[in-house]
View 1 (cartoon, rainbow over the protein chains, first blue to last red):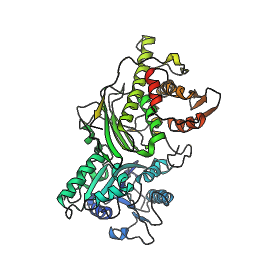
View 2 (cartoon, rainbow over the protein chains, first blue to last red; view 1 turned 120 degrees about the vertical axis):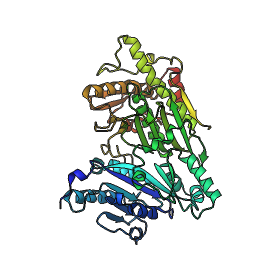
View 3 (cartoon, rainbow over the protein chains, first blue to last red; view 1 turned 90 degrees about the vertical axis):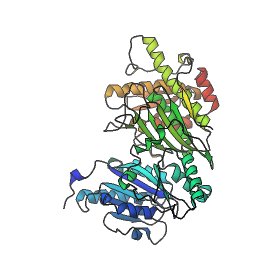
View 4 (cartoon, chains in turn yellow, cyan; view 1 turned 30 degrees about the vertical axis):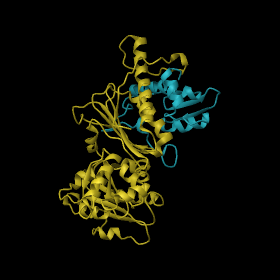
Length: 375
Length: 109
């Protein structure tokens, strides 16, 4: 029977389920898939090793489930992942499988999430049919602290998460769990922390955690900065509207040189000339297309950017942001001063040369940068 | 440019996203697109001058990056710009570099 086109979203949301080895990814997936609301979910499971086991544990082997077992999805089977997703899409279009409305990719415990997200965005076919819905990371309450200390993969998986699910809390000591929770809060303050032990774990909400819901935490006035194995989280909060062009120049320049150490950047921006906020999400070198939100999530209309960085001093990024942002504001003001006619933007096609004389000294601090917490 | 393998044209750059529902872009109409490109050229040239380079719009489709000594290369977008700029000038274009920020702050960009 042909697939019913109206049942298929224009862009199928893709959730990446990650977490260190033995942290409970498959258990969580099995639980989520048992929810009738997620009956129309396709699953791709990636396992290291010759013999795949996880897909059997999920107990739902059907046409919607694909096993990638020839290596780790972040390196050897990136092409295979793209092929599997194309094949799923093709079969859905041909009506060979019932139309699925979301896709979950369970990665190996050692996978770096970045290449998976990059595959999704870079593939010329996939990027027209799928979009990232978020990264859900499981963290083992018993062994989590040790894993975060010893394995950079574990740190990256936490840093990149849109939602963190704490597993095995029922067998972990309360003090250990509390320490881990505090640690996770400093490493990724913008990701909601959920417990797998909770009976009311809402599967549909969890799998859409990266689609705008992640801004709840950014609304908090300050986000603490704490170093953990060289990983720091901090926030930049700006009162005045930002110049979008200057922001784009700055962020692309920053990610080109330091992308590997910018584990996560997430923000909600008040742009000059725009009433509605714009959301930006980035993971290392990869930045998603900016989202124009329909409204501000709260009365706080300031721009807020959260960074999770590895081995970079937050104060350096703050200063750099401030200087570039000021440049954008001054250029617009300078143009308006010269023309005195209320034109809000430079004339189309005007070509300028970067002469030194054209650059004007800043007239005071145009922007206010709030330092989100201590360094 | 693909952020993993460096292949050109494999990726839509976020600062030049195609106009579609829910996505913020300044490519929605021709006037806004050209205005954004002109503003981008003007701003980025204050940064590039520090490295002895300048950018200009090329046919409204790409950008021409040139050094003050005459080397030049076409770049597609901001993601492509910085790796090419580093190659042409032989230096790291680091927005965290103290010297760059000092020069920009002092108005000698």
